[in-house]
Image (tube, rainbow, N blue to C red; front, side, top):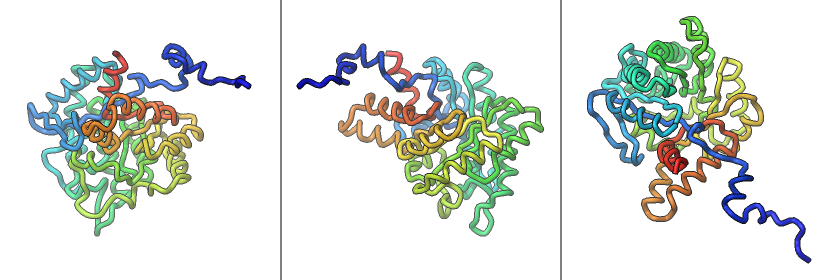
Length: 323
């Protein structure tokens, strides 16, 4: 007896597959990370992240133009300062590298949406995400620095700030400060469920942010925990987050799905450096098809529930989607 139900009928050729496709990725879903450093005419490739660079402000502007030309709507900026100190003062300096980059990009590519990472780890001499005393990262004193950093980004012209430090109460502190300074319309995208992941390895080279001692497990989330993510996201929403993020993405697709199901708010996911570099390494060895695996990765993140994807694949994906 022949089967009545034949799901293969709707897979028979590319036209029908495209017509009934449940999940699609477009350039509008993508946010491209950029690493801005000091100096001029500097474009240094990050050895563990092929085709990604530390770039001076003049070079960042060129990259921003390229990103915009590909139809990618937004970038997120990370800073590598010329000097570091215990309190990461370059992170909130009026003339810091990120502050300069914001102004330069908005002057040159005003329609490109500029998001800034708000954290201290790139700027502190010890590499931790906040104030350190006796080997401990102090929560409340760190909030004061994060507030300064976020406000400085707003004054420079940022379109959105994204606190990634995982200090308790930082979204509320930043929201209050932005409102007091007249930036009540500036959105916050919180790294709401950011796990202490081994997938961040290449990023530590990119941002020069390896901790001088210990690790970040006392403030970033423990990877085995699932229910805790809902609590963290809920707290950030209560404090005023406009978009919530899960980081990393691929090993935390269940968390993305949980967050999307639990909250009626846009969900972002960070397809992090290690996830990106693994694909490049395997492709270089000839073990996988780079384009196909890249798109499968992005589709899986979108299918899990992400509305926005921060990814180093953004430019390659946007080019492929155009072809």
